[in-house]
Length: 99
Image (tube, rainbow, N blue to C red; front, side, top):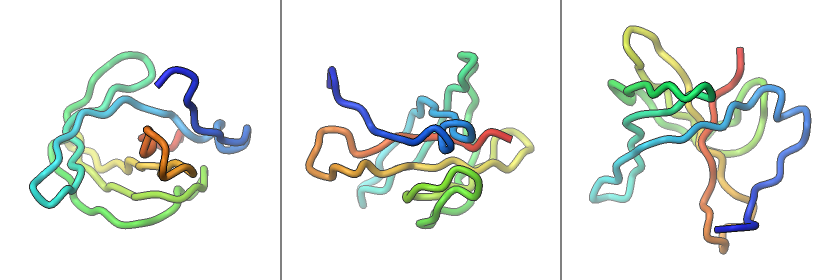
């Protein structure tokens, strides 16, 4: 929605790379990411979700869900950061930690 945004502090922004994620939602309501778009515009297929659990990002902090995924032959961690306004139209954003 126009004008709607999530606030983060500058220290968190140094480590967070917000990404566009394509996903499917199963009949139980679980979000299953299938692709992500890196900041340079390249798309990567997520071959498999290996683990999902609540947890903060090690470098960037924040509350949300930690998805361990396989992209090609590499294991990566993708985070879903919940909004601080659960009554708002945006449930959260996806990010990966910058190395």
